Length: 531
Image 1 (cartoon, helix red, strand yellow):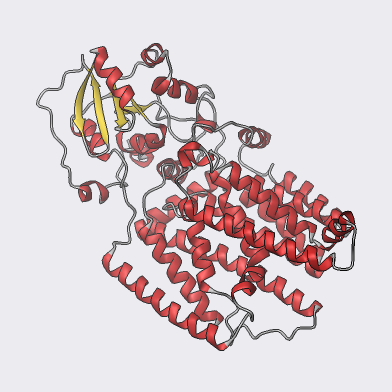
Image 2 (spheres, helix red, strand yellow; image 1 turned 90 degrees about the vertical axis):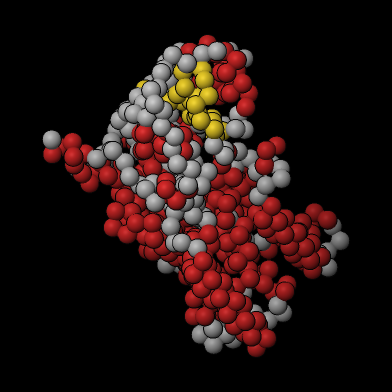
């Protein structure tokens, strides 16, 4: 039955990967970095696509860029979607192995006869469907560098849990060894450092051996210095985690005013976990305090009975998920590992029984049919939905040159499509590529009282705005210095009034016209070198 579970899980993940197929905002920049490396043998250390003030930068995702470019170059859209599905599946697969590891340890300690995983149903597919849905909005972009962070987080969690359960501390060498890779794939490696610290502190509170975790933490920090940029790269990573990202949606708190009516699936997950945890603690408090009269003694008995490492990880990951949307998956993954059996037992008195097996088979059949229907009706390709592709085409076919101001979310795409004729203000790599003050200037242009003074400093020729930013649009039109050139479903294109266009060409509106050619770009160093 466990084989059927894993097949069903993979089919479900692949189905969701095909459905949630919009290209991530930063992927365009990742492809450029990868392309530059494989065509020139060099890593970019500056932004050549912007007219704004830039600086020497340290790309904490350069390793991911190489992987993404090779996948796109060799396998196209299908490769990107398949890679995303495989990465998510492997991450969840490792989480299930941790659950089995913990369950085996529990059964051995309590003298329970272990279930045969190949003939029983040790996992409930509905639970993992809910888990997938809880992190869907963060994890299931087309493909993102944080996919490596999720994978390494799962690998480290398995290594740490296996070490403390079985006492094989030599396994910990895996952590600093993989940190060399993780730190060059994504700056999320700091989550791994935090995880080691929580294990060290938790085992200290559990009054168990904790010094190996301290040693591994130190070695992992040293491993971060193995990178193409040297010590400055590590300094940059430490600097980056201290940055305030209040204007970046995915770094905002989950209960930020603009997210109050969003992310309901994760909020449901977190609320359910909180309720179940509360019920569990109350029951345990009553059971342990049955023969005690003093409240302090009851609380002390409850505290002594708890696994401090487990409690610390769940509490810290929960607080992190509340603080910022970006960290939602780590709490969801942690609860899946540490609370799966507790939750499962509430709804299924036995971890496996014939009725559960029948339900698993039935749900697996439904997932199979859903997968076949999705593949048959939905193209396995990435999508430009939500991008200003018509506006970009207008600038391109009319051979316009100059400086373009647009929301930084779309900066990488616009630079990818319009370079070298059009230069952007900035893109999503603001923390590594640009003057730290540039994002504030962009915000001032959108909503600041002195927006016009700031705007005029930038020598802007073209503006692409989302219709949601109507205030800036009205201000520019009212100034008399700008004219409306194009209106599409979600965006408007403004051009400086003194820029004249003879025989203006109108771009087509058909979505497929743009989507099929989305990866075409004039950024090609092999052609430049050939000349």
